[in-house]
Amino acid sequence: MPSDMPTAERASAARPPAPRPLSPHLQIYKPQLTSVLSILHRATGIALAVGTSVLVWWLVAAAAGPAAFATVQGFLGSWIGKLMLLGWSVSLFYHLANGIRHLFWDAGYGFELKTAYASGWAVVAATAGLTALAWLVALGGMR
Image (tube, rainbow, N blue to C red; front, side, top):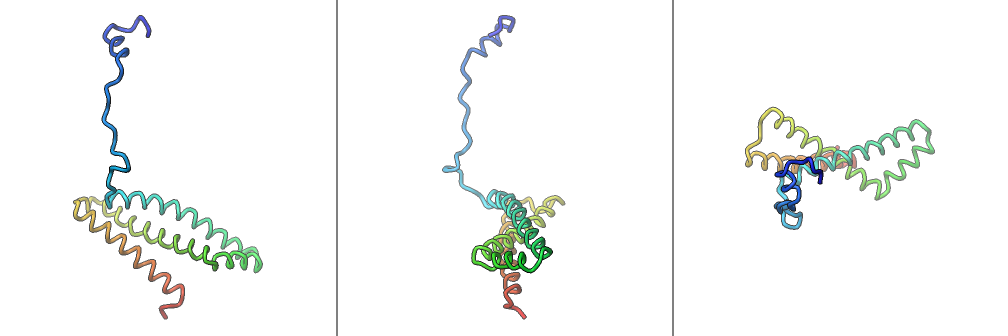
């Protein structure tokens, strides 16, 4: 400890820090709908970036020729490719619906707890409905 430090500061620097309360641990903290949706919004943003890379791969393959396009189409038509496309479409519609919800928040609407929960469940419902509709149309179920 420097000797030019005032006596009071030297005394407080020598004392061990007072114990501070810890934040609730994940095993204790009960996730709320709003926090889960916030985390999902970030995760779907990352998933959209990855999915967009797959879209670019598909477009480049289409420009590269029939053999490259057939390779990508074969992958995307496999069960793992379809699972990835399903995840990408869920991410797209969730991020879209939650983004609209955030636009309302930016305008100052929907901050009441009851409204925040209702709009959160509306985002979940819109995600499920839009994803199901997109896949029905894509698979030829609606003509």
